[in-house]
Length: 96
Image (cartoon, rainbow, N blue to C red; front, side, top):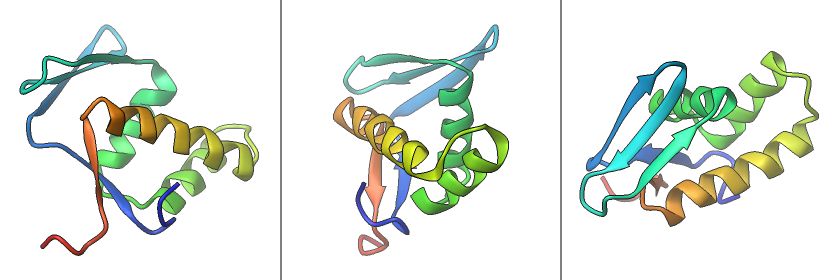
């Protein structure tokens, strides 16, 4: 995971909608479509709230029965998949 305090930001060209309990993401520039289950949708909401990776892990471990190290590893893989599909970008605070 990049820095635990770095924030992941939703790209400006990404739209998302809740369809019957599943969140659907679409990058309008690339045409990439992504579906998220309940946990993925929860993480997306936390990303949209501007939280750091450490804050997201803290929230998820409080809400779900998961160890912090497992949660951090899973979150890292999830965020990497979102970045690889150009749905989010890392906001290290330097590009302002």
